View 1 (cartoon, one colour):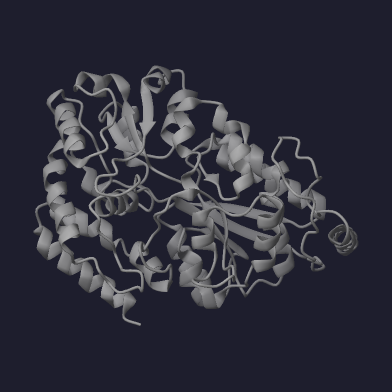
View 2 (view 1 turned 90 degrees about the vertical axis):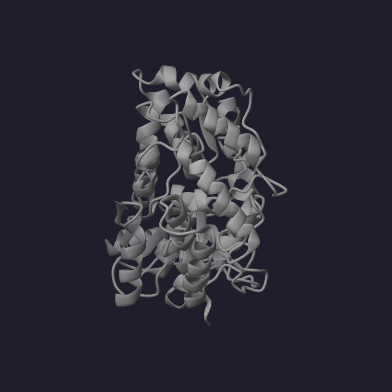
Length: 443
């Protein structure tokens, strides 16, 4: 093992002096990239890596990711173990890793997570600077989530992100009297009410769902002009705009199918596939699954996507659920960990992963906007610029330990659920959200 690792180290070091260590100048997939030296990362003798990341929602996500990890292992003789963890479980496991100083070398967690554990992480600026320079720069959200606020220090390496636009049955929307998804709140409410009257209800997650629950709550708030905090990070959730949003939810919620208060991230996928709902907010995974199964292909043919209504916002207020990779300080093999992240985002590995998932995790590096996947099916184009949304977790303030903690604590989701369930008035729910948010922003 030592001899193999030593040879890999020498090869990597030589490559760093001359040509990029992880790829050639011309990407076989046609992804544009610059020939620049990779960072010097002498691989530690006897290195091995353990990686944890969220479970897949589309099968190629896991299959191709594992294949790429195996390719890294084969090339550099570094054993790699990858564990896929349930979406709701990845944050508790990340917390245990951070608090005990043991466990995985790399955690590919969620959007804000590197900011929660900033003092437990190894900076990855060298990797980020190389990849950004090589692949046309990082997208807006990749920079927001990857870099420490108001600095050029990178805490995480964003792999990509997925948004949840409106996913709907075309025939059902047409039967409700609409040819497209309205951009205004009133029109969207009328559409949902029409679907309900036709026994074709809608459904949005109001349970503690990492992706879908947070995404719906954020859309509701932002589309009414609300915000968690202002530009300086002062808590601003208890506002007229928030109350307006929650009053709107009280009108919208009766159009939902039963059970959404307990929905997790897989719930609306199942409900849409079984034709219990006909409109929801979801990533491309739902369409992918329907399209891949002969039994549901007809549903896929009648399914399309559109941006969530922008309401009072200047643009559709989506943000992406981002896969964000962290290297923990307890690792004995920091260079191997950094080399792994670099390798996985090079075109030979990344573009097949992006394409195989039909864009489920939209690219974090600008050059991959040229991937052939975005011309493969007009129904997925809405996902192509997921990582350039102008909205982020903790909007409009800085991404920080506090913004990450609010998301992990489901403050916005539970504010919405309290109103939808009738347990709280909009005014009382906004006050409670303010109280909970202030606990995290007290510093």
